[in-house]
Picture (cartoon, rainbow, N blue to C red):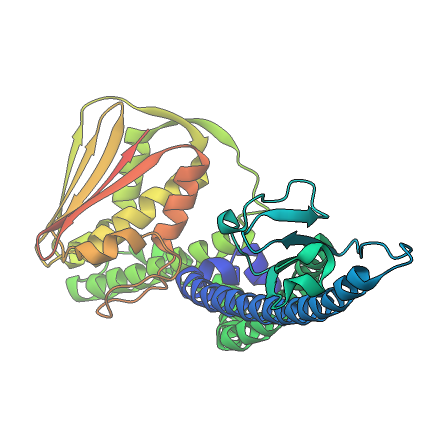
Length: 395
C-alpha cells in the first residue's frame, strides 16, 4: 500500500473518532476490571491473613495461659516469663492495673486500652492460680510489614500480566475492527493507481484537440459541443492533477517565486470561463490592491483552481461569484447551495463529501488546506445553506 503511505493516509487519522471511542471504552472497562480484580484479590488475601493472625493469637494465648500457671507453681525459680518476638503480652490484675508487659510503652490501665484486630484478650477465672495473680491477659501480634510488601508485589506482578493480556486482546480486537477499513483503503489505493495511470494520456489528447478545434471557425451548434468537450476534459484534468498531487506531494520540491496574484487570478478565471458560461454564472472581481506572494506557482494554482471549480460546481444556474482581493486576504464567494453548519468542521477532511448531486472524490479542499498550512496561510469558511459560501484566505 505504498500509495497510501505517500497520501499520508494512516488508520489512526482516517478513523480517529471511531478508534478514540473504542480506546476510551476499552480502557474504561479494562480499568474497571483491573481495579475490581485488585480489590477482590487484596480483600481476600487480607481476610485470609487476618484469619491466620487470629488463629495464631488464640494459640499463643492458650500457650501463655498454661505457662503462667507453670510460673506460678515453679519452686525452682528456673522458669522465665515467655518471650516471643512475634507477640507482645501484658498482664493486668482484677482492678485493671498493669502487672507486667513485654511492650515498650504499655497501657497502664486496662480500661483505657483501645483494642485492635491485632489483639486478643483473655479473662483468667481463678487469678490466684496464675503468675502474679493476673486476672486479664492481652496478647498483641506484631504487625508483619513483609506481608504487605509481598502482597503489593504480587498485585503488581499479576496486574502487569493482566494488562499485557488485555492489551494483546485489544490489539486483536482492533485488528478485526480495522480489517474492513484496511480492505477499503487497499481498494482505494489500487483505484488511485489505475486512475492516475490511465487518465494522463487521453486527457492530454482531448485538450490538445480541443485547442486545435477552437482555432477553426465553427457554427454555433458545433461550438457548444466543443465547449462541453473542453469543460469535461478540464474537469478530468483537474481530477488527475489532484490525484497526482496527493500521490507525489512528499516528493515535490517547492519552487517559490514572486507571483502577481491579480494576474494569476485573471488567468485562472479565463481557464474556467467555459464552465462558468455553461451555467450562466457571472464572475465579479474586486481587486483593491496589487498583491505579490512568494510561493510555488503550481501549488497556488492548485489552491485557486479548487476554490473556483467548487464555486462553479456547487453554484446555481445564473448564479454569481465574487472574488475580492486586498493586501491581507483573498475571498471567493458563490451564490450556491451552501454548506450545512454541522459539516463545516469536517470540510477539509480527506474524502469528505456532503452531497451526491455532483461528482468528485472529496480531496480538493484537503489539498487546499495542506498547501495553505505549508505556507502558514489561514483559510476560513462562512456559509448559509441555499444562500452562499465564502472561502477567505488570510496571508
